[in-house]
Amino acid sequence: MLKKPFFSVILLSSIILAGVVGCDTRFKVEGVLSKYVADLNRSQFFSISSPAMVMPASLPSSRYRQQSLTQFDIGLLDFLSLQQCSVGIVAGRKNSILGKVMSDSQRFLYELDIIRAIESCEINNESLSKELNQIARQKRLELPKAFSNALFNGAESEAFFSLSNGFLPLNYSTAEQQELLDALNRLITIGENLTALPLVDANIFEGDLKVLMDSEYAGRLLYSMSRITGYLNLVANKVGRLDVDICGAPMSYIAQQFEVHYVKVIQPYMGRINRGAYEVLPLMARLFDISEPLGRDMNVFLNQFSMANSSSAWQEYQLASQLHAKQWSALFTKCSVSIGGKS
Figure 1 (cartoon, rainbow, N blue to C red):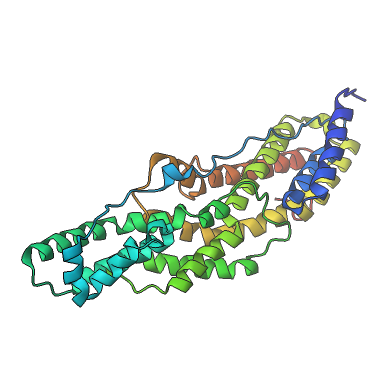
Figure 2: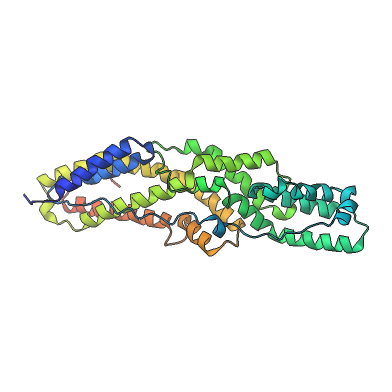
């Protein structure tokens, strides 16, 4: 039997990791993946270490997320002359003490209101009318930026995209994400109809952003894909280097670990992740498109969720899954072993 002097170190690390993840359900899946590797390592033919903690790109800081919007001021005389219509009232809201510290979501709603107010106001003063209409046109051009700020520059987006929330739960179900899907669809409807100046219910809009925040979905998905990719690639690379020496009695134990850990636990978990992602990621992609143009840092970050970009975290995760399945299938064929439900 081959000697593996560092096996005890790997085993000890697994025990310590199990203790840590056992206290925090956010990282329970790490223990499942680590146990898969640890039990394979009990065979003399395996010596796999846990993958290095290489984190995906995180959400850029606010300075790289926020897009600047044109500011405008109304002089006192102009303000008084605009009291006959809603422009003065809406502008006064922005110039109030609370208005000066508007959140990005409130600012977006204000932008819709001020454009609507300007375009519906009959102004007798020709120069003032011309000035305000020019402002309204500029604000229309900037509506996608204001919408982007509301989506990506608040506390809601920080929680939605945070990598510190760990994995998607091991028992994750698509049935739990209906509220998220509804919120994303409502936000898309707003974003795709900006030119029509949609009438947005502030409570529903703010509520939908809170749904994103409470779900923590995007960050958890990204973290889950990254860690699973690391583990599957390590296992696949090792399995791909095994030869016929492992066939026979040693293969029985290896096949058992594959079935117990991967077929019965990890593969179904990945299936649930995939089903959820196929519903959510296309909606996220539509929101990203609506919010263009985004800065370089934001584009780099958001591209990790792309189902089309060959270098995205999603594609790397899919490739790791395929390679893992291919290498195990080749080994089972080589050793004439049949595994029920293998993938």
